[in-house]
Length: 362
Ligand code: TRP
Image (cartoon, rainbow, N blue to C red):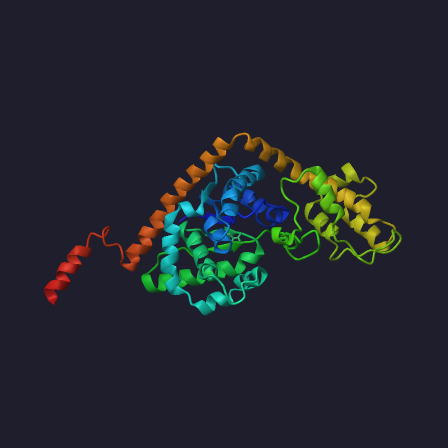
């Protein structure tokens, strides 16, 4: 079988630079590599509802928003099927069968679930749908026969959980499901972008994001608020580069050409860092530089998104067609799984014969 990609996001807000660095950029690269036979990009509204069940409007309002960001970032609907999770019923059905293969204790131990339970303050009152979402994610991945799941590092426990389910299913019911692998972005330092406040993760709920459709003015404002080195008080003071968010972002985003364009007194980032560490370089100067660099990254995405917003009929059609393709694929997997589980009563050509034989024996 060929190489197949499945990946996705929860539609709970606008996409930000953390998504771009952690997964979007990578997805576009893989899409254009020509190495994959099928690519599915899923808007995980079912999963989003596991912790937003009381606020379905938030999910509904962000579905098309996600599609717009995908297309604006370079996802090409001729190469990638964009789909809506809840419109593919085979996914929920597979989830139901996989639930038998996972213990509650194992779900509680899933590190991603654990940290999200803390973050959301569920305490002892965890909705069972939320606890179960790794199982639903295993259904997403296996329904499309995915070999490759390009996601951020925080999704590692989900892939491990999926592999366990695949192994159990194949052992009990016979070889049925494809064993997937995670595909992480290459540059180690860039896998997870910190928030502008220096917290480990950029996240809407922490209010420390730069959105992929931010205006130049908004980008400037966010960069000016960025956490740097609290001991770098006067320009003459030596400054620290490690843990300094401005430099973390420059590591990820700036290219040598940016220096020629915006800061020609330095050749490259190493020179800028050396000067900062020695002292004599102020935060405002490095922040102005980063603002220019980020504006160049975000401007084309923002402009493409605005253009697509004037063509929403087209965008709607893209996701409808992608979802239709996804249903074909997921239904085929569901049929295979049910046949191997022996619950394919009306599709099986032997079921009635078996019943008759059994009844004669007794
Ligand atoms: N859990 C992912 C997130 O929080 C979204 C997601 C749902 C997903 N199903 C998936 C990612 C399957 C990869 C594969 O963003």
